[in-house]
Every structure is written in C-alpha cells, then in structure tokens.
Image 1 (cartoon, one colour):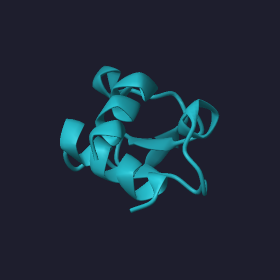
Image 2: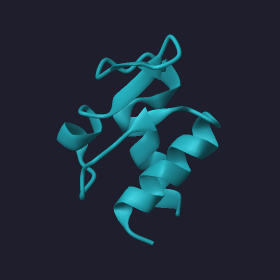
Image 3: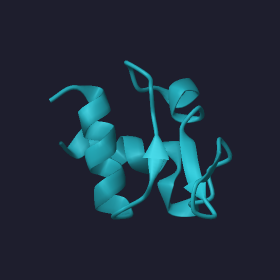
Image 4: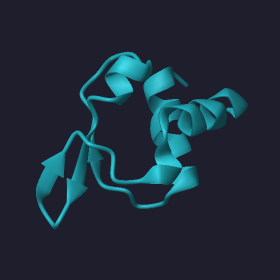
Length: 65
C-alpha cells in the first residue's frame, strides 16, 4: 500500500465518507494542504473544514498502517 492509499484509508478511518479530491502522487504536509474538500454539495475548497483531519492526525493514522 502506498502513501496515497494510506492517506485515503486514514481519512476514512478518522471521518468516514468525507468527499475530497486529491491529485498528488506523494503525501506530505504541502500536498495534504492542496486537498480540495467538498463543501455545500459540489463546491470545493482547499481550506480544510474538518478539524479532526489535520495533517498531523492523518499522518499519525497513516503511520499505524
């Protein structure tokens, strides 16, 4: 399992069914901050609206996999 797969699994574990778009090939804090999070049914933002999905919490969950 690569880091992108681990990131998606970690996000699903921390907050199931979170709609997002990630086009990166590697996961680090910079690429994580470029995730497009869905808000308001079809609108996206790169400002993460989910406090439980900080990079550090997602990375910690990824490290468990």
